[in-house]
Structure formats: structure tokens, C-alpha cells
Length: 496
Image (cartoon, rainbow, N blue to C red):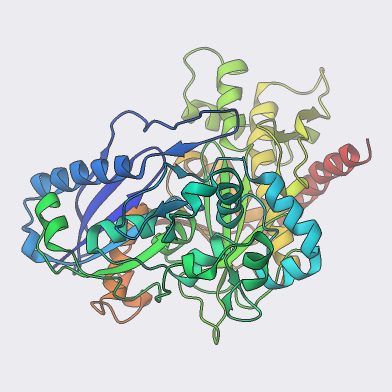
């Protein structure tokens, strides 16, 4: 038996077929091959046509079946991962009424800020665990005010993954995790957030019916089967946003476990076992894939804009022409822990939420022209990225999270031994590296939802751990001392 996973991103749509027994990926494909277009009619706007996701999904589906040689009759279940926070509006005939307002669209910022101030910070944080911000509910409030005629024709609103499930099955539904990412879920009442809907004047009937994340969300319809070359009746049994799904892909389900990525930007996504929030709203908290009212599992999400982009800047502007990242890692390892007193703040890629939405900028501190060279700068850049992650993890620990393990894909900054050793050393956590991705994770999630696997332990029993970085007890003091020096420069900037 095989499982089919889809990952609906803003750049592309990826499909993977996974052997349910071995856990091996039989084939993967993504479309479009060039980055998908984003419609930006005004500055700060970002929209995509939902039909373009479906068109790419059709191409990716055809490609994975052709490459793998798997028969559609052998697909036991389908799972969906998707770009979070997008808004899709449909009428009663399930026709899309306007392009989707996607995650990076900022038009609703003022709507969320007004709701936060008017309703009260305390109530929003204690019930939503976040500010209403620029999330899906605020995007819908913008549509209501600015496109009233279109708004009057909305039958249901959906997230991007809900739309794909609707196209596959002809049924409309969502999850608690999905509602929470849109600021539609009240964690105190364990119900839709009526107080925010009332403030925005939004009828709760526009929300789709709620189903468990791991459950049947419908079965492939005859129409979809014909379009995709699938068998009619395959169940869609899992659906989650990309960050919760990335954590699932890395087998992160339990309190204290963290999933991390460190590409151009970086993400730290930790699981919390109690309902809590950051009073300063420096991190976002959503229902994780296995959250229930009786067994809290919250995903605390920290996104850092300035991470790998600093390392790529160093390669373009500091490293000699032609130097590879592997060469840079080797040179960085020549400098001591703490980079001889050199610290770099990596925040040169815009405002950082964990710094109170402040644009701190990238800055270099402690350079002595007679002592320091290229190796110190290259190591300080990598340490600075790790220390920004540690800064966010400190916020999570203040919320009650006890960080024990950090799971990551073996890619990007995690390819660097200096980066991995620093991360383990400063956090005291084991860094475990895996070879997986979102579409493969969605396929495994479908196996859980369909009952093919008893639980996540069985589903991920075949997930191969490539390596693990244990924290060095002998070096921990040096890492923490370097971190405190680095952190003092943030505090210095705060006082400027």
C-alpha cells in the first residue's frame, strides 16, 4: 500500500508517493518549475489564484505516478500540507469568488491592530493566544469592508488546504489547528472565537465544519479522480498548515520537542503541553496537529527573518570569489568558540517579531583589527544565527517549554558542523537530523488519519535519523558566555 502527500506552497505544489510499509519515498515532483506567480496589485498585497494550485497539483500527480510506476488503486490515503493563513472565499456552488489573499499579504495589519487594542490585549492573548494581527480573520474583515458585494456572496471561507481538500472530495471542512492559525479559535471556550467574529461583524456560519486533523475529510470524487488519474473513493485523512506539518514530518509531537529550519529565514516550532502565551506576543501559538481540549499540544512558532541570508551575504561580500559554503564552514571552524569576542546580530532582513517588530539591523561588534580575521567573522555569523534561535527558545521556555530535542532536516545551515555544535552547546539540546520534507510528512500523516498506522510512533518508525549532535558539556560554559555577550548587544540597541 502507498500513501500520497501534497504540499501546497506559495512557490510550488509538491506531491510525493510513500510506501506505507518501508516509509520510503517512491517518487516526488513539484510544479511549476519556476516560482509560482504572486499577484501584487498594490504595495504590500500578495494574492494567488487557487485554480493555479490545482493546476500544479494535477501536473505533480501525473509526474509522481509516471516516475514511480505505482498504480492509483494502491493509494490507501491522501494527506495535505499547505501554506498557512491564506483566505479562500467560495459561493454555494463552490466557485472561488476572488484570488486568495495569501500569508505574506499585509493589507489587514491595521484591522488586526485595531481589534487587539479595542477588544483588549489581555482578552485576545488569553483566548486566541495571539494578537489578531494580519491573520485570516483580519483578512476577511478587510474583504467585508472593501468588497461588500463580493462578501455578501460568500458561502464559506477556507484555508488553502481546505480548498484543495474540497477540490479532491467535493466537501468543505477545516480543523481546530486551521481555525487557530486564522485566529478563529477560542482556546478558553474550546469553540470558534465568537467575540472576534462579533467585533468584525462576521457571521460564524461562514466557517467550515470542524473535523479532527487525523480523520476522514472526504473521499476523492468521480470528477477529481478523472482529472487527476486517481481512483474514486480514496480517503483524504490528514490536513495541516506547513509549519505544524513540518514538525510532524520530523516526528515532533511531544512537549519540549522542537522542529527547526534555517534557510534564508529560520523557524523554531516547539510543542508546548499546556495552554499558554507570550504576554509580549513575540511568538505565535497555534493548535498543533495532535492538540485536543483534554490533551493540550500547542505549536509555538518563532520566525526569524535574518538567518541563512546573513551567511549568504557573507559568502557574496566577505568570502573570496568562488568559495563554497563548505569552505566557509571549514574556515569558521578555525576560530574559537565565541569568535574571539566578535559578535554579529543577524537582523538585516527586516523587522523581527521576537524583537517587538523592530528592525534592529545587522551589526558587527567587538572587532579588533590586530586580532581578528575572516575566520572570526565567518564563525561569528554562524554563531549569531544560532544565538538568535536561542533568544527565541528562551521566550518559549518562559512560557513553560522544556526544550530537550531539536529536530531538523539535513539541509541549509544544518549542514555546517559549527552551526550544529553551537546550537547543541548553547541550548543543551540534542540536535537530530533527518531526510524528509513536507509532502512526505503529509503522506505519513494520512497514514495516521486512515488508521494504517496506530500512532505517530508507528508512522515514523522508519524515519531514518541521519545523525545526532550531542551537547558538549565541556564547552557549554563557553557557548553560554558567548551568547550572553551577543545578547548584550541587543539590549544595548534597545536602549538607543
